[in-house]
Each structure stands twice: as C-alpha cells, then as structure tokens.
Length: 222
Image (tube, rainbow, N blue to C red):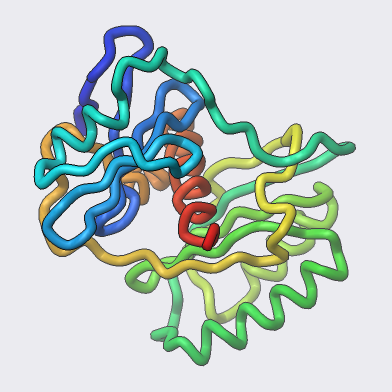
C-alpha cells in the first residue's frame, strides 16, 4: 500500500483506523486526525482541538496538517517507571463472540490484570483479537502461555514485544473497543492501521499500534 506525502521531510502518513476515523502521523508522533460527522469531515489536532471542518476529506486533512512543523506538539503519554515489558499479539476467535461473551472475558481479564499490575487494551474486529499488554516480563510470559492454551483463541501470534520506557495505558487494566469493519474502499493513498499491524514490517506494526492507541484514547476521552 502506498503512503501519501503531504509534507516533504519527514513524510506525513495518513491511515484509516476505523470506519470514519483518519489519523495523521509524522515519524513516531501524531499530528492530528479527521472524523466524519454526517456529510462533513471535522479536523482536530493531536490534543483533540478543532482545526477545521469541510465537506471534503482532502480539505479537512489540509486543515490538520496546516503550516505546523512536522511533529510539533507531539503527545508523549505515560509515565516513566522501572523495568517494563510490552507486547502485542493477535488471535482468531474459535467461536462467535457476542457482547455478553466479551463482557465475561473482560471481567475476568481485568480482575487478573489488576492483581498482577498488567495494563493494556483489547481490540476486536470480525472474529479477530488484537491485544496490547504491558507489565513485567515474567508476568506477560505466563499470561501469554495461558492465552495460547485458551480454547477460545487460535492462531495466536506475537507481533511486537520488548522493553518499554513507560506505560501507555496505565488507567486501564483492560480497555476495550470493537473496531468497525469498513464498508467502503480505503481512500487512495491511505494505509489501513489494522492491516499494517499484521503486516511483515515491524516499523509499520509499531506505527499502526501508535495509531490504534491514539484512536482508543480519543474514543475514551469523553
């Protein structure tokens, strides 16, 4: 998939995270995002401050980028702490998950994570889970062994893992969002965050994770 370059150096990348949510990144920083509201597109900066609205997606994108220097005002989240490990995995649900099943899964996960100082988010779309976990390495190793043995999961695949400088989801023992399967084609020049997360490039996967994490925080800011 090709990227769209709005500013020359470093490149500005636009990705679609959810059906009506488009996010702009520069390197490892979020520059802003566009949300579709009815027939119009509203642009916001990285702190969710409105920067413009238009019936044109392209115009709303231009309002987000504006004349700001790439990466200026980048949001850095989390607080520095001691040794921390983080990982992202995907899996396929072996049975169809309705909301009541997901509620039960989340309740048990949150209780266990609270007891073991684990935080993170769970994303679900079309029968596939994507989960970001952060905590001690030994705790996450044991947790992944349990997840791999859980009959509700199959095709468990760790996408990214390693040490982390700070927690990204310190307020959530297990945040949850259901991603909407897009009903319209991906706009030309856009990347798909969900697809990039499972691609072959580690850099693309890390960027997609940042996009999904930012999207989750925007969705839960209210």
